[in-house]
Image (cartoon, rainbow, N blue to C red):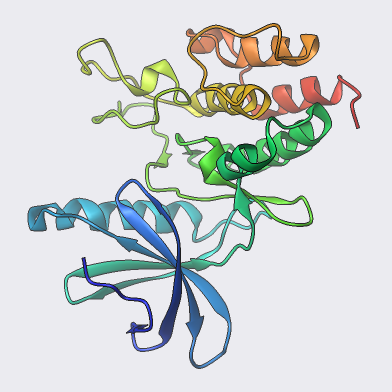
Length: 263
């Protein structure tokens, strides 16, 4: 793979450093040579030239999911660039650390901070779910949440987000094991996929909370030793296998969090 550091992309974005990787992309910090402002550049990567169509579709999904959104938890996306068979997404640069790295450095997160983080996340997801048609994020996990020095958070990586349509079932299985809801993977053979909806993100809220509190991925059982009693109740309801038994929207989750009175 060509090293793009110290090169200019799209005639204006000078690539400063590599700041992250995930799935089919690498992310770099870049500086606009005209304005001097910093941005994040996501470079989509593939070893299969025939997969370029899928890469572009993924970028367009991410752009379309966010281009008209305005919420403090959601990053701004500015442009798509195609250059020499490479595909780039120009995004808001968020300075901070993702929560997977945060837990690795600092250990499990105390309940007060955890609730502060997840209430922000719930607010962002509720905004997405309230759009017409709703946007289902489908990839909530610690590595996709950036926490800034001031405690504010940002969701990143909307590559598998979708616009919900009641009459269209998912055609492909997407999601990270240990965080994604069961319906994202279909049956044991990976077929007969379901039409994931906003309750899929509710499941991700529960599994993310569990990881932040225990430093372990959710496997279907909740450790009583590592989770606060009332917090355990919220996680348990979020992660019900049957979506009908979960909280039905993010406002319900927010109300439960606030009812803990740990602020």
